Image (cartoon, rainbow, N blue to C red; front, top):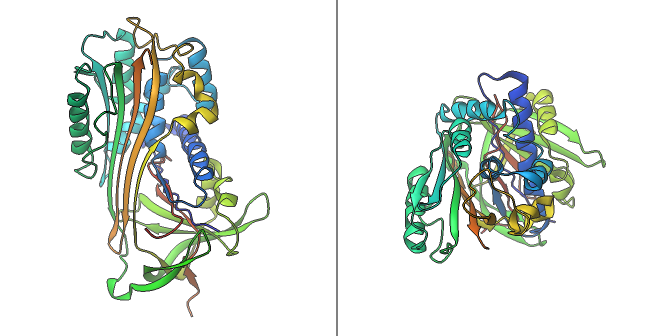
Length: 392
């Protein structure tokens, strides 16, 4: 049996209506789908993931896709910003995320200085992501790594100082698409550190490990649900200050039920169902204080989802980006860090798509597997996801 933490930060646009919700639902479902592939490949390991980060860099690449590559990406991703009105909706989402207190995000485009970008691609990046290309000399790849790492450091408030390792880029690199997120939220009602005690956590491999557990007795939004396969589970919401962001904790009732039974059922529609059916009840919540770090290359997961076309130089078509030379995606990298303690939550994520040429009170004690989701209630953009199988 194993424990997963899924952090899903869903942000909503102030304006944009049902159409905006439709785009964000599709981006949310894309992120959940990628997380499902990562979780299944890491059944007994911790997983931490930023759905919003990967959907953003894939959408930036998709803006430059043409022909079969565009068709394959649209089919696998479930949406296309090349469709009429979609870039405008993405811009609204970006605006609303920027306006949220405690949340910072940025999109970046680093392009080989000798390569010319198509005018239409430049305009599309500006319209959808408010991003303008910066020229780099990729013939000096280690210097380019330093510039990109400095950009990530600046846009994650110093939380991710070394995103790319030396040697991770080559002279064949032509374009690096970037997304950075930084989140810092205080609980609306903090946990009292005096009530934090060491307790046993029952890990994925069946062992029990001591971990510091926080306790809070309060009124929470809470609900009980059943998956289509008949697995019973509960959902409890822990709000942050301001009430626009919250963490959703999801745990099966039975101790021997794997979390895959829950994560396989995650969708934007399911999360909306939770929201509609949660009710305020008094509970004593006990949960771990934890820190997670993750570094992952998403290439294998994305290929398994049907995105192999964009990784193959012989088939990839990114002629809407440039006609100077043939491009393909070499890797999609993500680094995520998350800390949850008595005061609140700190999170940071950096994602990059690298393109190259050539190549008495009722108690809820979470001492066993559960999912967690952080949600900004108005829009539905997932910023972080994770899987926690055992204390570090």
